[in-house]
Image 1 (cartoon, helix red, strand yellow):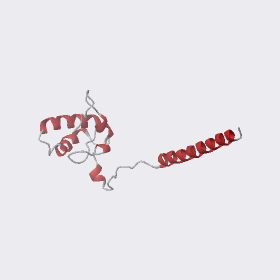
Image 2 (cartoon, rainbow, N blue to C red):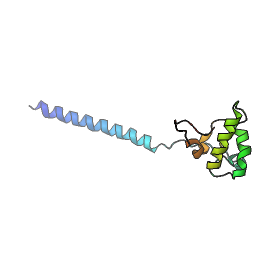
Image 3 (cartoon, one colour):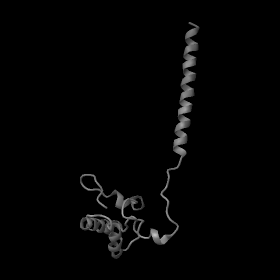
Length: 117
């Protein structure tokens, strides 16, 4: 019978140690900040790439640049201009970079695909 309490005590100690290690690992993962997109210090390049930074009349040239490398120019321009009118931004470049314009990135079709090119 003397052996049973020491076995229980040993089990409790191991449980506390494992719980403490798990808590430390969770704390480290919570404290680590998420990486942020690198934004150029040149404001001229970022104009229009952040949400709400464009005027409606600026959408055409931005969408022309955005759709310049696609073989489906007509639908690309149509949806880009529709998205720009709603979000007032167009991500920089011809592809990707949607993290700069969350509205543009988060607008989805009925099937769940991206609405904006």
